[in-house]
Length: 191
Image: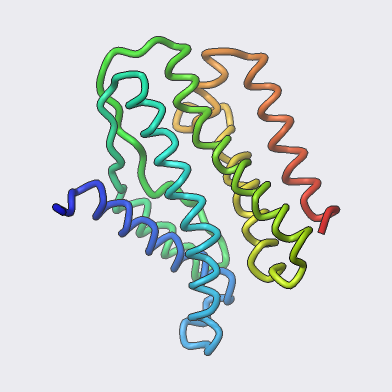
């Protein structure tokens, strides 16, 4: 199997975003003995959320007949890593580049796929947490991060998914935005 640029970019972005969150969660203590465990939890919660978010965009775009491929943004990955030492993460590690003619509705569906994947992942972590409370050290951050990723990506500014959804359908945008807000505010009340 040939390792494509896309696979390399996904793995690189997954690793750096997971590392950035691990650094931020550990308070910037790279040599803390817990950093390996924090990195593994970050890889499973943040990394998985990020990769599946991007693959959801790619899947929808390809479903509509467009060419789609993830490209990492090295500058933004560096910024995410740098900011993590100050306890803050601005994660925009790359994007799915889409080529082909698509209607506004199809672009809206493609944009919506990523945040909805994060909502779905957050719900999966929630269900696991409710039925297996022992998993809370992993499932609670998994819920929090994925619900926040969904909300963050629904911001109505041009670089975010929310902008494309809003351009396509204001009602769908409003419903999904409220869903994201409820998820972010409510996850802590459940577990």
